[in-house]
Length: 399
Ligand code: C2E
Ligand code: CA
Ligand code: CA
Image (cartoon, rainbow, N blue to C red; front, side, top):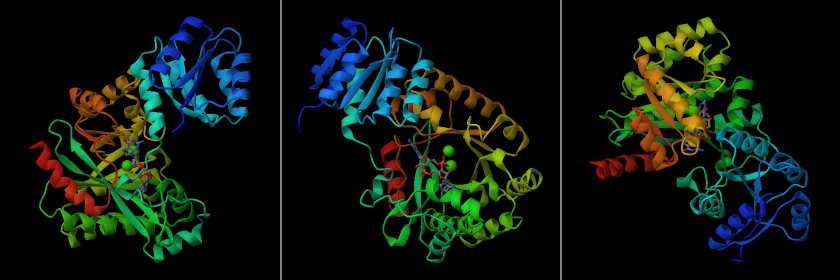
């Protein structure tokens, strides 16, 4: 493999030089420049695998440099550095990502070797597959998804479930799974939900879809874990809360597969997008009366607000992964998480954090009294078969 190259732009030569030495210490070929003109000239001469840009510079600032990089369709991985507060760094990162740039991350000054290594190291590992268990499959989205193709998928029963574990924060023991839909289109590639759920919602096929995936996952769950305290979380689009037979149908499926409704958690997303708020409230209350648990998903984002939390009969809050994934770097995210945990507990709800990607975040959640955790640090979504083995292995490992 040829040596990877880093170009550093920082108006302070002492800082530029330090970053260059750190980068060289990490085995990169590095060069620093102190102004935008030399920087762009340098890029014209030779492309760089990594670019480190200082955010605050006197003439052309880092945000402007990134806009120009985006115009040039720059493919380098970009590291944003700055002595400014985390909020400013995070905003710069978002704006650069929205311009379509490949952002490795942001590092606060003074830059440490460990911080730079984590960016360069992570960057060199490449993007991992979303479903480690199924890495052999191709994730396709190149064919248009419309009502007819989705109907075909339902007719051919092409929708499958991946199961992502949830663990108890205190003990680490398995607490349950969240079922996540995947479409094995034409029996080959896997299509992720972000590509087909919106189409199902718009075309009115979401009810048939929900019936199919709920049926499959409850059958799997009843068969796999007949006598255990594990729970199964199912995602329900709040737009589907118009179907008055939903509660009874779900109850019969549970009876058929001998799963107590208390073991099923219905996760509701986009609670503010309910078509009929009065009917939705009725249905949600009926779910609870029948014993089902209700969770407010993506809590803290625009779709799941405090108003919904107070008005609707939830039993669980799921802290949105955008806060959790940032917890390690961001004090602000940690404060938001802590407030949501305290809020949830003061309302008598259980709190789950999703998007836990590292040990530090897991420890933080534990220290704050969060009840359950879910995320790549614990396990990625997996097939039903692997999920069964995972439970035995995890139980053996933590006992
Ligand atoms: P969600 O309910 O917020 O599900 C969590 C998503 O986060 C999943 O993506 C999961 O794979 C991903 N995830 C879990 N842990 C981590 C982590 O540590 N880091 C990161 N970066 N991501 C993590 P997925 O499977 O692509 O699902 C996307 C969304 O599609 C779900 O978001 C849910 O809203 C929707 N969805 C999935 N299955 C169904 C379904 O059967 N019915 C409905 N209505 N919606 C579904
Ligand atoms: Ca969910
Ligand atoms: Ca979520």
